Length: 140
Image 1 (cartoon, one colour):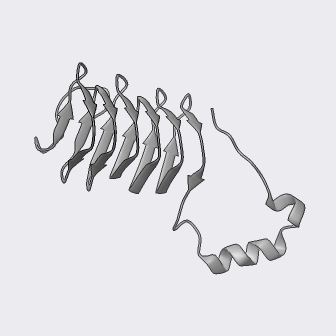
Image 2 (tube, rainbow, N blue to C red):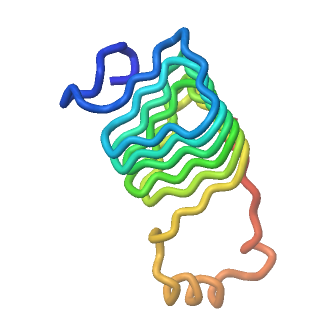
């Protein structure tokens, strides 16, 4: 879906063209596909696709978020976040399911809220020596 410039599969939703610059909040209950530039929030209760030609400066939230362009801001995906090989994210991300393709750039913090139950995490902390518990990972 990202590589092409077709509207969303259902034909409903919002498509921001490659030559469009939008300042402000873009919100739609349906899918949003961005080919252009947005300075502000992008909010959908369904899918948000940031294509290779797109740049978003501001927070993004949606159920399924796919990034192939450049984003400076936080991203919240209630379902899945996928960073394509051309995708560049500078900011924090929150998602239950995360996929970072080879070649992608991600600089920031990641939170996966329902990845582990708190009891399991407490058990791990007891069994892993303190010096091995702290680790910093940066993906570029």
